[in-house]
Image (tube, rainbow, N blue to C red; front, side):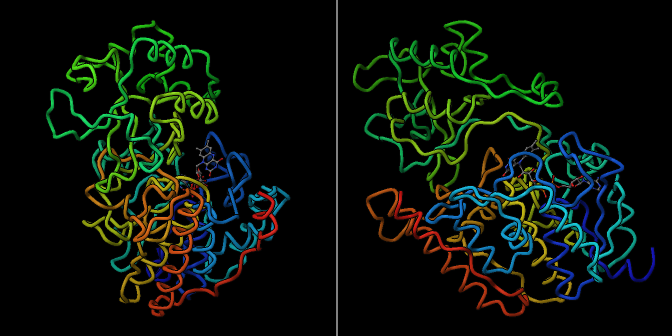
Length: 466
Ligand SMILES: Cc1cc2nc3c(=O)[nH]c(=O)nc-3n(C[C@H](O)[C@H](O)[C@H](O)COP(=O)(O)OP(=O)(O)OC[C@H]3O[C@@H](n4cnc5c(N)ncnc54)[C@H](O)[C@@H]3O)c2cc1C
């Protein structure tokens, strides 16, 4: 290591989060060393040696307000995001979504980063953090190695933080918005009345249970990639596979009614679906034991048939896929740093902020925090009324239990002071508040030297067509 290395911020992983973080820091005059292991050492999903490669869909989701995905893009534009701007330059027609020409986007990001005088791009796999941590006393390190972090580094991180704090496979149940449930049809009750009705329950009679089993058995499943099939084997079984194993299997498993009473009959129901609160505000609920590999459309179809779920909105669909992510609420501080080693912070999907645009936002957020730490300035506090601020709060508050990676969504937001009736009006109020809060945060934090803000394309004509 040379003196220059010692002053640099080391960023490991040149994906979406790492590339955004590198650019943000370099543009503020901070020397950056960016390590990317591809193309010499590939992941099971990446195909090229480019930075910021999109591994699956080429869509960064909606550009149209009031969706949370669009509000996040407005927040990123206000904070001067580099990758979002590149995505807008490399757009392909996709209606209301921001889709990009995958290779052109990754190539443009790679060329700009390689040409930046403040960034040294090193194509090398980092297998251990210790040498970097030992090399310099003042530098910052950002680990942004993503859901497919290399085995050696993932092992190193697991050893450092404790194996129980790093997951390698995501087998998640759907999470739904509290406001979209029909509470008249659900019962607030804990098994054997322990825990003061901490759970919501959809109580099923025999006919309803059999209809659910039948719909699970015939629903469309997602085809897993070969590298994921082997991991699924060791994960908990998807609910549709349990349903296939026998008509009563769920009734004696995840949907067992033991300890519950139907208040209308005074008897034990035939089966029950339990919902556990995702956060202390109880604005989002998790369907316990419903981890699933069904397609998103099939999940909507099956779950909306359950009494109380007819109009349900999903905060997150159930998924089963390879995913390396930290138990962030337990191990990360509010700036995605490790409290015991504040020079080390994480960004991107490894923190559990799921999705392409969220990875970009998290790279930007980690860079702002690294910059504040390096220059000894006050760190950014993102308002929890912004979409990304709400996700950061969910990911870093110790109160979060059963942490699951999430996209930005309005289910995580603090309640509105005046709640409009319709869903669309409610979302519009959330979006407006989120954008205003981000603008105010930017204005109040001039010490962070934000890159210039820019405008997103307007879609008023599309809004009217809907
Ligand atoms: C198969 C799959 C499909 C997905 N599809 C979508 C989708 O369609 N839409 C969506 O919104 N999200 C999707 N995601 C989720 C997520 O948004 C993306 O994975 C996103 O790219 C995460 O950004 P990131 O920067 O955290 O990680 P990545 O973009 O994966 O970047 C991490 C980088 O780190 C490098 N790296 C890993 N280990 C090391 C190491 N030890 N040393 C040096 N470099 C290393 C990798 O080569 C990679 O370039 C998908 C995830 C997976 C796994």
